[in-house]
Length: 161
Image (tube, rainbow, N blue to C red; front, side, top):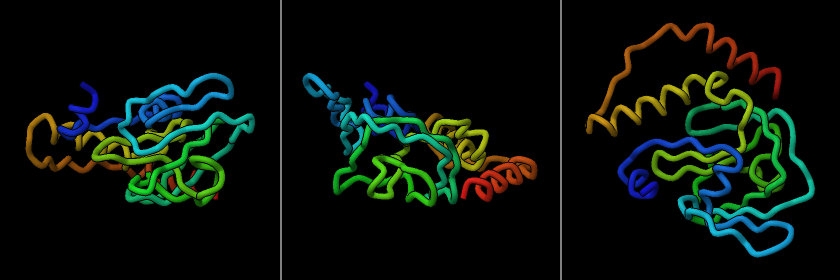
């Protein structure tokens, strides 16, 4: 059912464990790999190293900021589209400079830490996509005064970069 809704264009934001479970599989330290939903062309391997700290990425939405705290190392397959490229932080696995994954209107990532309040432009995009899916047409959101939100976002980008 989830895959059908995603194919239909329903937006989704999955963070950390949700992101991992929407990939192809998760391989724990001990035992068999756990099959995932297979939405994202990615897989995750358990690690003993925790990746913790502020994160800044460059994405199709512009700069996004958040906080990451994970030990799973996610690897994107060749056909995967990353949410963005790391400017600061660890991202998917601490090595390839990618963070997250996008498939249609579904986003998976490790960016905890008030992701949507710190990135109002991402929140607006998710809301717009939800409305467009519901009504079956392009939606133009009425502009709101995002001055304070933008100032907060820009301050976080500057502080974390």
